[in-house]
Image (cartoon, rainbow, N blue to C red; front, side):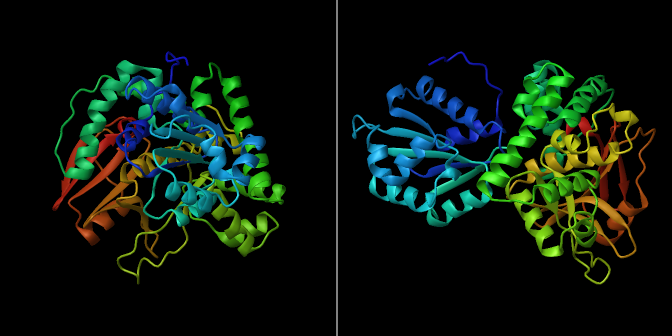
Length: 435
């Protein structure tokens, strides 16, 4: 085995290490080509080099391999036993693309219940198939998500010195958001350097193969390949979606409406479809990690009765591919939507499953991009990708503060740091590139 393979640092790897010694099955979900196979290889290398596990006790199997899949399906226990040379020693089975296994949940439950000294780690790119597995393994499986690289992982891969500067300020931003810890920043000399990397990141996205690509043409070709593979493997092969034209049309429409509220009837009409089918397609897009739908925040139902979700893309490079738009950020009419999508993805990675993220809009059309619900506290966040000379906030954010009196609020800006207070609310102005 080559222990000198260069891997991108993935934050999820640190999580998996914590659970490696426990009996529970680890299931890693996420979009195709987000790095799940590589993550299993990283885990294998770590088990050998850090935990001292013998290489022959770590078995890597991909169920894209039809022969392996058929043998496993016919007799799971005999198949697994064929790799075990000493039942007294612990064996690690790294099962890639497990969503291809029919009735995979029942098979895994049977193996978990009847075999000792065996640890299973599985991956899958369809949430629906993995959810089926989880149903059979309640209490026996820990679920994790691996998305394309986030901005921190991207920076680590591109420029480790800048990544250290980012990490320092990003820690302060997170501590302010999650723990109410105060901070001040003066004379930031790196904000423009980080902003250039951010522009690259929000143009081509964070799929590992994209981050490795050297030039723009290569990045476009790789993105196109990821998209076409998704259509042919996940949609047609795995999920049996046959209305490819409608699906592509829907993706293109959603790309041009990033950050906007979905109008189901409009989408149905433009795609020559109908409401129920559009709902099914949107569900598939969410379950295969292409889009994320953001629901509205409600406290006062009389004035906030807006039900439709807003749409964001898990990877912004994929979104840009759908509308074939890769030009320089400052020249683009959709730069505000792109940055809003970036902020959504980064906030989503912060709140994870513990907290809630939503948007706020009243019948009077006052709107705040994001509202974080952190336990009993709410934090409104607004994205304004423009230069600021002094702290100032839009009227909608002022309305929200007046209605809810939050302890704090955030304005994400192009490159401006600042602080202002409105009554009991502390508002921080933070450059987007530090989120």
